[in-house]
Image 1 (cartoon, rainbow, N blue to C red):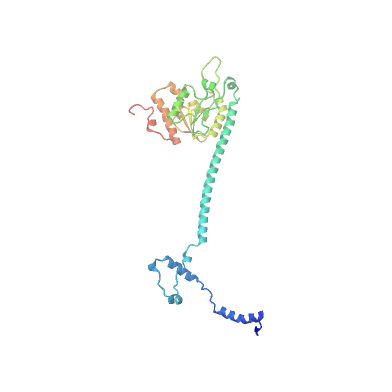
Image 2 (cartoon, helix red, strand yellow):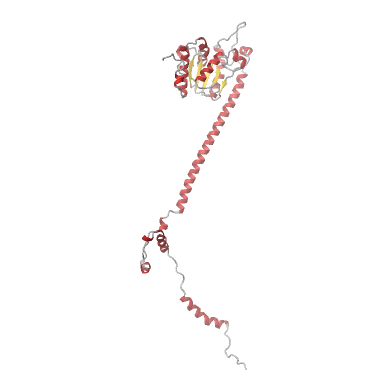
Length: 325
């Protein structure tokens, strides 16, 4: 025969009331995990960085009761924010300087290119106006073509003659006859080429000759005064550092007054702020081919080279000197 249990099962409320005091007692006996303090972490970091022989030997009791006070290694480290600010400032300054220099160089190059293009464009307009000039009816009627000039539009050195001759009138280029060939030799001896410098004349048209006469004549003062503004505009746009006047007629055409070659040759004059060196015309040297006369012209060219800051070799300085000098 089965025996029935005489005790009744507990309700949920009764079971909770019975177990809650037990659980609360257990909670009181539980201890939380120890938390590391900032100072202990710093001591540990220092200890890890020290060699074994220098690590402090602290007893458990000393560590508990008398913790060693050490400077915070964290506080001694440079501030990340300070590093970032310093790096950012350095980078910004460097980038700004690089950008400014690059921008400045680009701007300067662009400005220079724009200026050069503008000068070339203005010279082209001027050339067209010169080639179609009709200010002197007598010269317009007799000329084959206008002789504008030849060479580098940005030349530092400008040679100026008086007027085109017969050959120049036919070909439209200054100084291509015998005198021109001698001038080319002088230019080469100066270690230039005709493409490096610019060559022009006071008068752009060959002076007309009386009927029945041949050869070339000297330009009249009125003709030079009429044509001079064209040359002045060329000089303003080419901007040479030095002008060499070839012959007395060129000197008188530029200065607008009579002079003597004895008074002006080898002496620095001024034309609208540009240093002007008068010297003999190459045609004069063809008629006077003595070493002494050639030396005079060459000494003038040495002065020009010095004015331009060009190097002069010992060989150049010795051209056209008497042997033993």
